Amino acid sequence: MKNILIIGSTGQIGSELAMKLRREYPGGNVVAGYIKGAEPKGELLESGPSHLVDITDAAQIAEAVDKYNVDTIYNLAALLSAVAESKPQLAWKIGLGGLFNTLEVAREKGCAVFTPSSIGSFGPTTPHVKTPQDTIQRPETMYGVTKVSGELLSDYYFHRFGVDTRSVRFPGLISYVAPPGGGTTDYAVDIYYSAVKGEKFKCPLKPGTFMDMMYMPDALRAAVEIMEADPTRLRHRNSFNIASMSFDPEIISAKIKEHVPGFEMEYELDPLRQEIADSWPDSLDDTCAREEWDWKPEFGLEEMTVDMLKNLRVKLGK
Ligand code: AKB
Image (tube, rainbow, N blue to C red; front, top):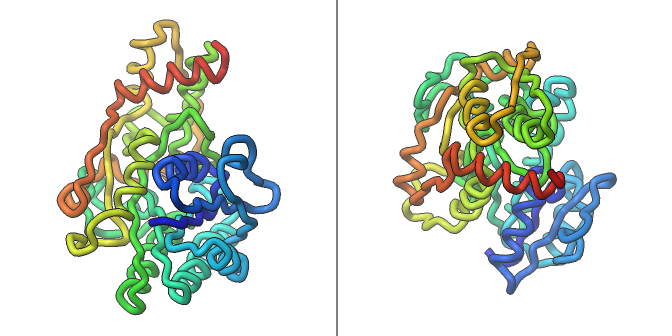
């Protein structure tokens, strides 16, 4: 990787990934692709080039690739699971139409492509505990439909055209930098904000709702390491299970209470998010990622909680 285009650079993952890539690949261009209304600001704007790239417009992707001689595209444009249920047509247009545009540009111009999949690519008939790498994927959400279709399309472009497509299935991602928006796992970020603000947290999911979660530094490292992995070792491509921790609301709440003794949580269930969460795995088996490209997480619940609380106190001035 040398010249990298990030489509969706101002979102939850993109804004942090862009800064990491700019630090790690100082000799090249890391182009922050953005859409109107979500322009880069501050450090992201000032530390490198940015370019208008609406993923639904293939010509804009091609223009940015040509201008900066891009060899690798990180395609991070997507609507998250809950919001995709309220706008399924748009979710398809961005998730699948946008991916098709990206892969076509990559095919014509010889770029590698990373497109994240998700625990949302699984569904109610998937084995829920230690979900295997290769298993049933029959999601019942539009988000899941776009993710599993995206995995298939990306593998197709690799086998048929030799496009170097690679991907990981992200768990719920937790960060103190950019907030997520419209996901099912968002509660695991919101809960830390409530704890630091001294507010009682209203949890939208019921006790016993286990899902895989990951601290953002591990997720960003996975996104870089998979693209740097030795291709001769990869038996899978789109997409690898990766995992670091699995918890339910009671477990994360108890962990926060260890560090913020006065913290309180009550339940105010969101039926849509509950239904989506119930259809997703409780925990993933990431053996293939560990074997094929040496994936290994660094943060568990304790380490993440300490770091989240420390950084949110600074961010919120508490
Ligand atoms: C969501 O909740 O929609 C995402 C995801 C797990 O893909 N965070």
